[in-house]
Image (cartoon, rainbow over all chains, first blue to last red):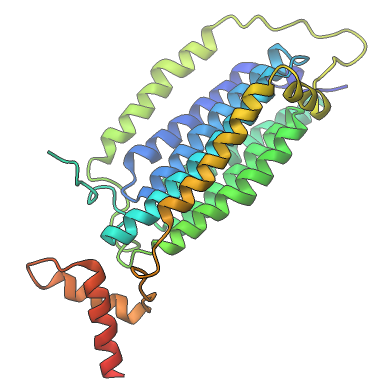
Amino acid sequence: MPSMTEAVPLPWVLTLAGALFCVGLFGALSRRNTVGILLGIELMLNAVNINLVAFWRYLEPNVVAGQTFALFIITVAAAEAAIGLAMIIAIYRARQTVNADEVDSLRG
Amino acid sequence: MNTLITILFVVFAAFILASAIMTVTVKNIVHAALWLISSFFGVGALYLLMEAEFLGVAQVLIYVGAVSILILFAIMLTRDLEGSQNRQLTPRWWIALIVPAALFGLLIVPTVMTYAWQLPPPPAGQSPAISGAQQIGTAFMREYLLPFEVAAILLLVAMIGAIVIAFEERERRRRVLTLAEQVRLRRQQRQPAPLPEPAATAIQASEATGGES
């Protein structure tokens, strides 16, 4: 029975997850549009999930903890996306903009 | 057979990374969201390759099905007229490039590549027992029962919170502007020095167009 563990070394998968995390971090830091920032954060959460599933598959395939944790992260990500997008819509209603640079009421 | 899996992994990895890079660099935010969906699909395929079937299906259902639609709706509701022409990146985006690049090149790759992973020995003969959907369900009802309930409450709170935050009271609700009205509103806002109240200008704009037509 061929499996991923024999065909692909674990560091490859972890490097892919790290690269995806860094791409998401770049997106979250560099975008001016608040929706774009949220897209970057979603990418980062996905990268962490790849990490968790890879560790589950390679190190402890008969324990469910890795997959359970990934499922909880998906749940929290969905809640975060709903709240974040609701806040973006509320900000847009109040200020007619989604540009993160222009939402600076708390600037001293 | 193993070569096939290696090739599949490389293809999926390239697909995920290319989609992610397009997500963060493409100018149009709608296109960015669509690239994000393709990246989600790639991650789901990777889960299937790693034999986490339930997570793969959950990924497609939750991310591709729900979160992406939420994002597309948010983009639609916050349509920014100048957004597509304007710069999408911050003026000092190269600093934002240095930080993740340094994190990847100096921290992640050396750590991952040099650490001695204590992988379990490959099983001889029969395939190893892999926990699937049934084991996950049992675990959720036994040892992870409390976190499971907390996650349910979190989702409920998030749902109510999103409704409360995005809710607009009836008397403050204003008509959705057409594209021509939005263009006129933008032009008005750019010219006078004192910034008028957004709600008031919206009403003015709608009155002005009503009078003309």
